[in-house]
Picture (cartoon, rainbow, N blue to C red):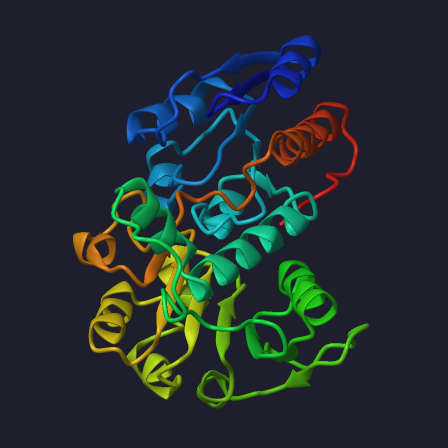
Length: 316
């Protein structure tokens, strides 16, 4: 069994891959090209892809009889893989749920606090040597404790964010999802997205990417938000209409935004970069050594199960 790993991995994951499998580790950090994906499908039994490796129906059509029988995705999100086209080609798909939950929720809170308290602006001010000292009305931001937060999507990550908001900051939690959830903390289910947006101080996006959620947050939802509200996106870039967000920020329809993901990642519009009321992070959601190692080992657990003929632990 030949295994192709599409990105450099942490030391422990790389060591395990080489020890347990006939593994080839790609050294590039950028997404695979169409040629590379076609080669991987043709020459390897298992491919470990990740975000940006666009395994579309076109790729599977160009390799009608792939040697590959498993895409062991590194990441919980798999909207970059056409799962149905993969299945028709005889290829199973797995992911790495669970390992990413707490780290991603932590980044959501990082963005919420940084944007609300203007931390990015403050750091830039200090670094520029333009800070003239404390005064009572300097860089007034938005209080967080006790405020209202709306969470779009109440899966593992949405619930982890809600716990932090409720237990850590005494926030009033409301949420929108396909159906109401049985939760261990108080939270109001709001079926209408615009109504949720209109009734909260912070709106956090925690839904999966894909066709069903593309531009879920559009100009109409942004217009429903109040002028003092802040939007946080830690889901997928395409969930949010970036052009509509830029307009809403420029026209002061909302107070600010915190983004860890972008619609055309890694491209970030200059209009967003120029805005001071936006916190911009380079997709740091799961960026800790512990979490990235856990994700890698979970992907390899799926590879090991496949090689040994056992049921896949994390099929999608």
